[in-house]
Length: 167
Ligand SMILES: [Zn+2]
Image (cartoon, rainbow, N blue to C red; front, side):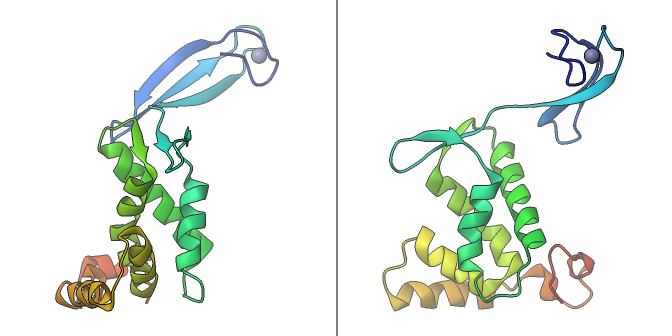
């Protein structure tokens, strides 16, 4: 790998460390020419097959853009969306697949979006789960009522986590 400082054509790995979740490897490298050190992160490539059949790299930005539409007018910040996109990437990587369909990403978004904002969740679910009647909304709302978010329970540790609870 080229040195990012002097563009020397080679570098030496001086340390490799697997991340705690086992999904990436971080390598410390040193340039034999200028002696400077830098790090690289190695992850399995993750690609998405769009409905059109086009294959493209997984993009957190695209996840954020898709969810942002469902969050219009809701108290959801860009930082919330960035965290959600990171959680979605981690959950799809954790399944071990290297290639997924655009629809799989939508489904992976749902549990995380539900924790963030229930109205945005319903909007998003109505598109990705192809709700086509009021009954679909009714059952999704009934499901939300029957299984409230963990963050709503008094004294639940999740309530203290700013990433999960908005209150
Ligand atoms: Zn160098």
